[in-house]
Image (cartoon, rainbow, N blue to C red; front, side, top):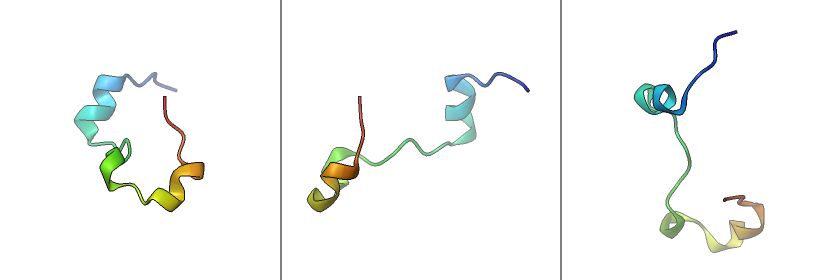
Length: 34
């Protein structure tokens, strides 16, 4: 299995999540982020 880099994911258009301002506040307990 090939090792995929972060740059390759970005080039492929991988979705990394929504901006915080687009969150539904009711979903906050279910959103994990670092």
